[in-house]
Image 1 (cartoon, rainbow, N blue to C red):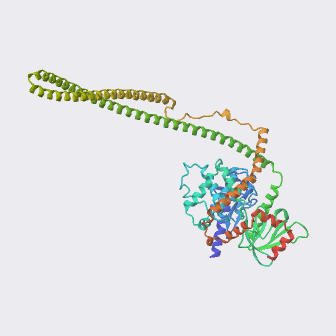
Image 2 (image 1 turned 90 degrees about the vertical axis):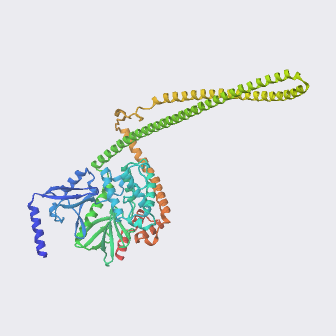
Length: 591
């Protein structure tokens, strides 16, 4: 069976060599691409083709990685692709990844595409817990990841629930606290809202600046054994070589910076590192396989070369790239300011339009109210006029009755002479008639007064009606004069800016000013770091009460102990490097 499989693989290899082309699938952090390559292509030809496709010039950080058995390997630049141990089936799958990490991402990564690829890879490593990240830092990093994806925070757009489908936190962190998805989103959104004024690119750089201070950032771990056969971990990163205990990948037991290492070599499974100084002992360890030693050597050489390169003057190519990047950032800054001004003017125009609409609606409401008051006044005036007419008729009727009573009284007086008895009776009747006449006169006078009062009320109602009509005319006139100020479609006029006003020449004075601004930003970096630490401490305090300590992983416990002792990645490295190289080698052999 094994011989048949070997024969089949040999036959497939022979067919591939006889063919003129072969297919390759390149998997980047953002997308996959597949294309055909010539059989004679070397690793460098394929790598350069991928870099040109991506528009990447900072190629020295990256490589093409492939899986082989239970480990990984990087495509060698000087050898033909098909002569290496790449997967045999087509298309050949290779992963375009960062092979070496910068010491300071903000200063070393020049191109936006470089920063973006590093951001995607580091974010993936944190979410998959290949890099240990404390909970408070995870929340802050998640807020910058949201900013990088959605842009500046807008409460009208980014409403509760907009992060429901996003994977932003390591599962370990979510499992560690008694918090719902809504509670996590609220914390992340609160941090996200504080990042106003930053672009998506700025958010990615801030993400990398925080991530590069994590203990496991940029470290490649390998299982090794010292002379005593003790299992240890070798960590290779941008600063040097570090020795860890197998259950503690955060705190190295000893470290060897690249500037203290003179030579690195291996023979079979034994790896030899020669520190500077003739009297210093040689540092040796054994790995599990020869292939692992080759991988360690590749990473050591690449990281050492970059370590030396950082401490030298930049090459002309790098200087040109940095100059172009500064000009591009300045151009983008001017463009952002222009867009910000346009946005501000448009918002002001929209606010003015809304205010005019509100004022128009208010005037219309006032006109309706005045019209209703006028109608009520007219109705009241009609009612009062009707009452006045009735009162006048009643007064006329009473006057008529009073006249009749007076006539009756005169008639009684004339007949009173007919006799004493009749006179007495007539006097009595006359008295009664006089009393009735007085009563009728009083009633007539009272009715006359009521009629006069009703006439006055009618006059006041007509005056109120006149004032209401006058006010309605005023309001209608004001609304008519206010309307022409609004655009025909109730929208502000289109805003436009002449490009001539935005022309920008980069002179020496401009470049000096940019340099001074960069220096000023470096001075402010310490203050920002202090603010960042305060922000992380505040986040930790807010969520600490909801932590379930029984779910803490060993790395969480070690991180908390380091935090309580005030130990960080850089302080620990500085402390270890203060020891003599001889002491560190002896310590490694005694582990």
